[in-house]
Image (cartoon, rainbow, N blue to C red; front, side, top):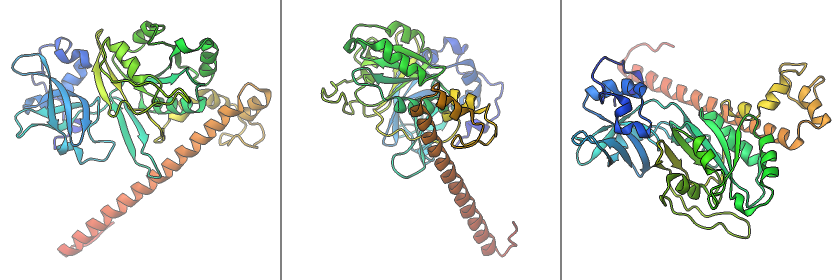
Length: 376
């Protein structure tokens, strides 16, 4: 399989005379991607953006080599689908497609991702799952029809920060409440440095501001029933996603969206709608530190650099808790997500150690079979 990440960029002809004039520009194609793709273009491959993935195949949008216009093809992803769950093709990926392959077009390589939303898979496993790739903005949707769960929003924020994209919180269904501004203030306190918007797909409140804040590629994440698909339809200007009413008793929704799908927006850019997330397991990294930047800043004034913020003397975090400037709920949320991150890190280290041991055993067995010396 061709490895685009390690290929040297030559001075070969680009995919089009000008990347900005390419039909794929509206999907995020840039001069940088054009240069990166040059070796693949020399090999006769066509650049495409993956719209959705299911069962070893995907829908991908590309520029038809004959007509010069956009078209969507069905392509086999199995040549790159045997990678682990993080590196296999997903919605938002830029791919190299062989249109001459038979019996169907085939994805033979992926371009390196600029960003990736990765969560831990459900259950006790520590593997990661990519929800969307090459995203500029992650919109965290939370419904105002029920009291927002600040701890869950913080968890989503950590997930978004870790992706490398810019997070934004959209408080949906503003038409159903009278105290949206008070709720927004509470959410803003739990989301330092993050834009928090109050929006209503029903009345149009905040939609234009949201549209202006989400250029490029936007992914919408959140629980079922918070209005993600409805928001997608409003931004797309058409009913591109099916929607269902949330249950009146608890405002929880069903999984109307069952797969991640990339939708072009009329003003340019694209949006990725995602299924509702019941479990939001974090997959390590710096997301927690960024989501809790206020606590991290306080920690810089602690007497000890390795302070755990429990009973240590001179702890600036505990001092802020005592004086009331730091809510106890937020500190507990921070501690909980930190523990999860430490668990993931320990499992990842164990997995890497196991992989190294397995590789060494394979080499040892091969060398012994060949009658050669085995050296560490």
